[in-house]
Image (cartoon, rainbow, N blue to C red; front, top):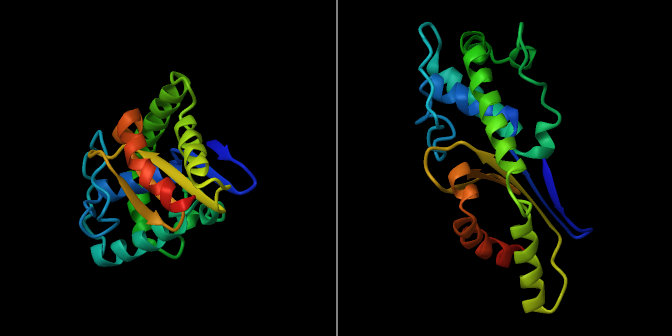
Length: 198
């Protein structure tokens, strides 16, 4: 996780395993239109998993409950990890637990590969990815001739098939890798957000 900030504000950037797994499960189960529908499909795409015998309405409700708990960084810390062999985190969400049994191995392989790609991109970038954030906040403070207001912003960089950014929880925005990797487009997207926050 990258962190930039002061005593008044903080911006983090990460590619969390929990969100990667969640979107992999969503796409593998074909729940794209029912769950976290504002986020497009992931890329590269995943093969669908057999959902025969699962109650898809119940699965969608259970998925949305899980997503609500993991979307924000501060609540994600209190959610149990999705771990085999029993997937205890889903003990009260039996359709989601069964989906985990069917999809976990492939979803975890896919998510781990995407995280390695993200880490390689970080290692190859100079200056730091959050330099843009710091510079825009500093410019805005100079324009206003005052310190920033207090705020926190968590940027979750995920392999979404379309460039863009989506608010998924208070203080939390999912940013597509393609937007994040285009420095000029990212700065243009971020500038009005910084103006509103600072």
